[in-house]
Amino acid sequence: MNRRRRTSNPLTIIILLLLIGGGIYINQVVVPQTPPLFVPTPTPTRSPESYLAEAEQFMREGKFKQAIQVYQTALLVNPDNPAIYLAIARLQVYTNQYKAAVDNAGNALVINPNNAAALALRGYAQGLSGNYLDAESSLNQAIEVDPNNAVPYAYLAEVLALKSQSSAGDPDALNRAIELSRKAQSMAPNALETHRARGLVLEFTTNYEEAVAEFEAAIAQNPYIADLYIYLGRNYRALGDYPKAIRAFTSASTLNPTDPLPLTYLSRTYFIQGEFASAIQYAEKAIENNPTDPYLYGNLGVMHYRRGDYPRAIQALRLAVQGGTTEDGKVVEGLPLSYWPVSEYYYIYGLALARQAQCGEALLIARAVMETVAIEQISVANAQEIINICQQVAEGGLPTPSPTPKP
Image (cartoon, rainbow, N blue to C red; front, side, top):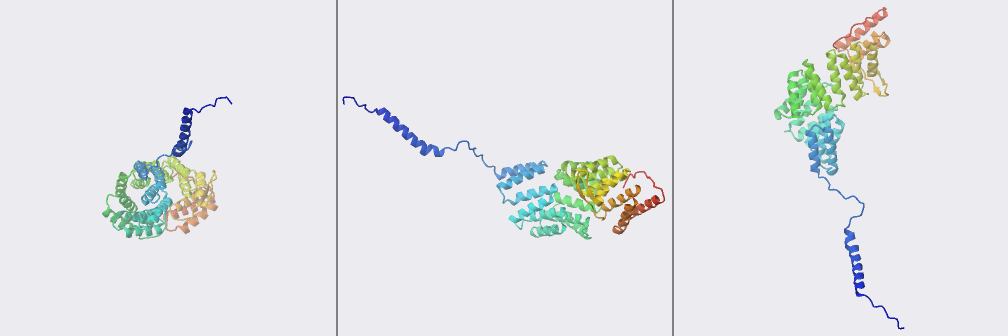
């Protein structure tokens, strides 16, 4: 009863009130504004313009594949921009990805069905892939939409020129290509597309010197398109300037190292000069790039035959003619007999068989060549030579001629 009661300390009360108030402030104000721990801080999103600038820089440097990748990333940010689809499609044409180019030009047309540039680029890619009917339709639509643009005329001229050299069988295609290439030239004489189309028309009309000038003018505008060097090399070869042809084909292969076509042209050029070892080397490199292409085996077989190596010639040409499976397990589809160059594979195959005294199969080939490509005098003459050799084999003799230096 006499114990003294402890009195409250005012300072303690003040401290407790401050702690309670601070807790309430942290809970109501600080915590909502504090980001969660251990969560990555978001980085600023790149603008579409920055992607386009980067892609255009790659394109100016000739790095087409890198440019395509950056453009595709730009589409994730801006998927409704038809110009990006067209930029990708154009680069895919330059790198021989024709189906993908058709698809991307089609994506641009989904956004705007009357986009003349998209119609023209789709038609161009269709034509380069051999779809001439759809190509002409698309390109004519582009001309209807924008009749004052030289590019669709140039594209159509090139497609028709290619068609004239194909099995499509349009006798008037080259004449139309000549007319359209001149029209494009009158509208845009300095455009790359105009130089390219005009050069191809000149090549197919055997005006090789003029064609060289056109392709060199196109290359001066864009030195990174592999096909232009292939066209240039073909015309130098036709003029008999083999060193320049080899340099052009080598440039094409450097720009597009996975394409077997420039390697094949290199092999044929060395072959014409009688340099069979180099010819075979490049023919084999071409096969490494595309081990299922029967044309490449036909080319290699011709090289071996001219060198006098008949067993290897038979091995390669049998794959070209009959098809089969390579030593690496690759399946090759045989080529049905048709006009040159396939006819050459057939009669060279028959000649190689005959010189190895395998006349049962050789005579069947000779007969097929005479019946199927009777208008090709060289093919028929070689088929007759197969018969002559087999006649000598039947009589007990087999000549061994020296390798022929030229085809």
